[in-house]
Image (tube, rainbow, N blue to C red):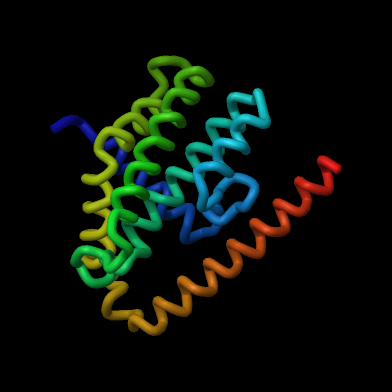
Length: 178
């Protein structure tokens, strides 16, 4: 519907960053599984650049999670998630990209390419996620390489590591406040 090569380049860069470790989507100081934590993190600072990074990191986390690391990405069908959770996560991703776009405009100017990319991702989040799901099955061949048991253990280990890092970050924040 619109020129979106810039979104394709952004997505390719994001995925390359995940593979090489340059993009750390499990940073507990930026990414949180709850909206309240994300908004609290943003509200505690006046730094527009940090606010942009928090919203962008959470949006990227949801984009990659929903597009590559869901059961639907492995099976090519609707994920077996609790009713409404997929829509809720999609809504969060759209909102986070929208907020990131607004802060990118404030930081880099109205005509900044990254602000436009974030806005396109916000408007068409479902479409880009579906493309990632298709791409993960077609090109990444995760279905052929990983069994469902292996995927379960990878997801479990990632969740445990994320929770541990989040606990440490929360304790550090508590102690700093104290």
